[in-house]
Figure (cartoon, rainbow, N blue to C red):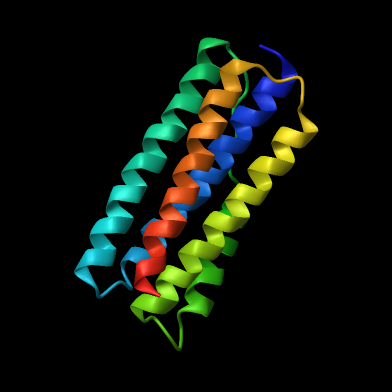
Length: 143
């Protein structure tokens, strides 16, 4: 496996892991059943994409991404702070949209910095980016 492919897949793992962690953290604050169902569905799809990236890395015996405890705590803390005074459906949707936008930006940055990647990683990266864009559109209805 090329180094560029490995880096793209690690970025997919990082982004999906953060999204799953964010959904797990924010779900306990969701009071709207429709939004809760949407986030649960998104969590499942993020897991599927994460597993694709992990499987491709493991098949090539390449090192994957591992989040640090500090990064997890920072994400949880940021969510807690942003929902401390306002945990409305609109605020939660806004936070998830912002997270998806950051995920898209980091994936584009990774793709631009690893231009020698092949189909192995680009299929999974494109699937994640397409899903992020669809998620944003879906979450807009909750604003």
